[in-house]
Each structure stands twice: as structure tokens, then as C-alpha cells.
Image (tube, rainbow, N blue to C red; front, side, top):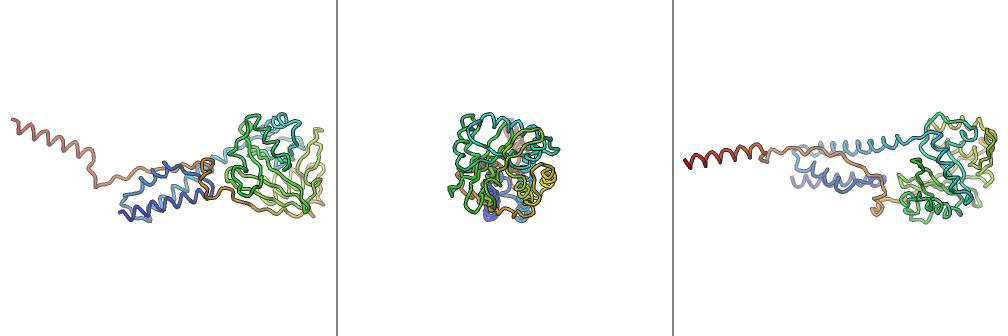
Amino acid sequence: MEEKNKEIVKYIEYKVKELQSMSMYVPRENIDKLINAFTNRGEDINIIKTRIDTIFDNSVLAYKKTLDKEEYSYDDLMKAYEKIEKMNKPKVKLYLSGGLVPYVLLDQKSERKHTDLDLLCKKEDMRIIREVFRNNDLYDPKKDSLTYTVNNIDYGFEVIIDKIKVNISTFEEKEDGIVEYYFNGKTKIGRIKNINAKINEYIVPYVSSNNKKYLTKSLELIIADKLILNRAKDKKDIEKIQECNGISIDKIKKMPLPLVREEKLVGDNLEFTSTMPRIKLEIPKKEKNGGFINIGTILLFIAIVVCLILTLNR
């Protein structure tokens, strides 16, 4: 049994490390309870491992379902955007990006839900925009790529405005084009995107249908981003972008897709586990072991002893 218990402990620890490699954290007390639930069991070791696998898989699925519920309306995102514009003005320029742009330019409420608001900021202005959010008690270092990066690259950061997740990505112009950096606060992954474009092709002024001026990432480059992802909502957004004034079909045909690479910012460094998503594992009830005397047996034994004592004292 001792060797079997060691193998079970080793297997559970291996499964925990798998989650950590995906930037998911299981509290130590939860791990200990799981180990306690599966050691000293009479089942075959392979059956126990299968049950452990099921618990880990179900726990990750339950966590991902909670992420899917984080969806917001067009109005929700616009309120967050307007609040940022008000607190930031006239500090630095932030540029709209992502799937919200065509609906803003067309002055149409999107019929789909959105998970976040995407904004762009020049690399040299990132220090200032961090201060803007810090001064408004909205900055959280746990949502900042600089807390985790080991290569001194600023991938940007996230803030929460009225429950809306806002991605502040950064970019810089180089001789061979634009380099864009993006940070995923959940997976702790930094993304580097090389775009073959000049600054005036990357950030473009548009006038919306309700005669408002916006500086946003170019519509053609937003299409390029969405072609890479190719989700159902991205296809819908591409159709909507093609309705916007200022879109150039010729540019789209000639435009090469951006080159994208990703860097893991956390890895196995447990110093940062407190900032990882906490995964709660379902702990099964401890299997009753026939080798132990249950409470009923103990009470019966006490009753017999009492009867014997009373009989001997008569």
C-alpha cells in the first residue's frame, strides 16, 4: 500500500504541474485534501488515476465556463471607453482597436456580445497611461505584463472599468514596420506582432456616421487580425467592416498577414502563483475502509462491557 500511495501522490503532483504550465493555480490545501481522498484505497491504481484525470478535467471545464459568462453589450463597452477618455484627456492618445471599431464608425449597436475593450498606446506613452489609471485607483500590478516579463519587453496591461476588461496594448514604429505587443492576463502570455505598415497606415483617422472623429487601428489591419483568429464573431465583424467608409479592398488584397509569435511570461515560477487563476478541485468522499472499527461497533462494544460489569457487581 505504501508504494501505491507514493505513486498516487506523484501522479496528483504531476497533474498539478500540468495546470501550472497553463498558468492555473491549485491551492496547497486543496491538493492535500485530494491526496488524502485517494490514498489508502483498495481500487486498482489505473482506476484511481482515471478518477483523478476526471476530477482535473472537470475542474478546468468548470473554470472555463465561468470565463464564457464574461460577456458585455456594445453599450457597456462604450460607457467604459467614454469613462477612460474622460479621465485620460488630455494626457496621452489611446486608439480604439478590435471588433468594436466598425460598430462605432457605423454608429450601430452590435448584435453580438463582447468580452473586452481593446485599446492601443504608443510605447513612449505607456508610463504616463499607467499613472493615469493608478491615480484613479484602477491600476493593478497583477494585471500588468511588467510584473512577469523576464525579457524587459512591455506587452501592455489590463484594467477593469465597471466590470469590463480593458486591454491596453502597446506599439512602436521601426524601420521595417510596426511592432505591436499584447498581454493576456489570464494565460500570462505576451504576444508580439510584426506588421508590414507605416504609422499612417497603422493608425488612421475616421469620421463616423454620426459625424464624430476617431483615431483607430486601420480597418484593413483589423480585418487581418480577424482573419488570423477566424472565429464566428470575427467573420461577422469583417462583414460589418466592409460597410464602413474609408475601407480599401485593394489594400486588403495586397496586405500580408502580420507575423505573430508568443512568449510565456510565467512558466513554472511559483513566485507568481497568487496571480494565476485558482482552480478548485472536487474532492470525493473518503472511501470507507473495512479495516477500521466503525462507531456502531464501538458503541456495541461499550454496551457489552457495561452489561458485564453490572452482572459481576450483582
